[in-house]
Image 1 (cartoon, rainbow, N blue to C red):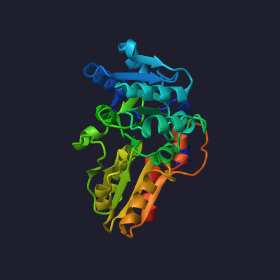
Image 2 (cartoon, one colour; image 1 turned 120 degrees about the horizontal axis):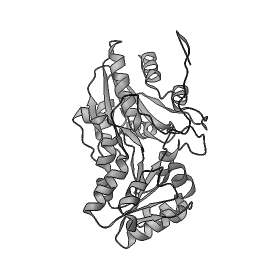
Image 3 (cartoon, one colour; image 1 turned 90 degrees about the horizontal axis):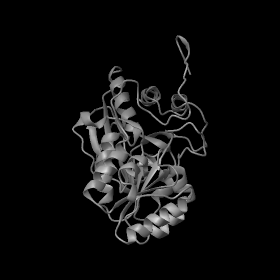
Image 4 (tube, rainbow, N blue to C red; image 1 turned 180 degrees about the horizontal axis):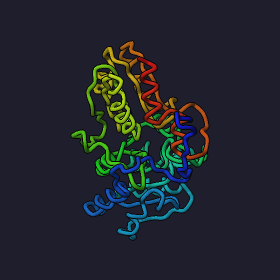
Length: 330
């Protein structure tokens, strides 16, 4: 990508799975902290990981509750099978690994050991979507698509630390399996500015606007809000609807926002196949609304390795890319 001052120099390491902007307010390890807070109140809560405690913030739980932490090694099928067994005897397990391993390697174990008998197994997936530059082996660009078809599985795609802290106790209190797309490390604080509280299964309008409605999930809600501010300089009034729960999906709120004369756009850190866009599009079709929905998301392809800012620019997830796409559609 070039600018008027020449080539843009991007030096972010491919190993850094962070999307916080410079100077942005963050919370360190919100998942690990929230899980510890929950465990102090509920002795049934246990934590498991597949050799990825440090990289999923589960190490914080392990340090505080060593007798309730289980290191399963690099064996994701065993991880989810053991979590299901713990749930069957009344424990509340949170099992962490990378999203690619939970979905691609261990699907059958989660499906038959947890989903079919409706066990309270909470899967926490690190590096969802394009949050690492490692390449296709670690980029879980299709995790929602894989898990959406599993009967009874709840899917949460949090925007920030506010969502994560709010989601953890609600997931633990839910019967049946859940999947949380983890944002780890120093996670931005975004939603505290919008009189917002996470509610499982609910979408919420964060910002009103007469010209465009952006329906977003995950880190793309942060980008949608940033794009809305920049589009205001172009005299484009933008609404933002945040949908942290992908399944069960809040059709009523989202379709009410889409069924207007405004340009409707979905934004997701996931393939355009099988994720938020297709969830919204299928709901629109079933209701016979006849509205066009424009997707912003990752392509149906294996993505490159590299620095995250470069990759987000390349694949259209950056704020500048969103602004350009919206202006081109108006």
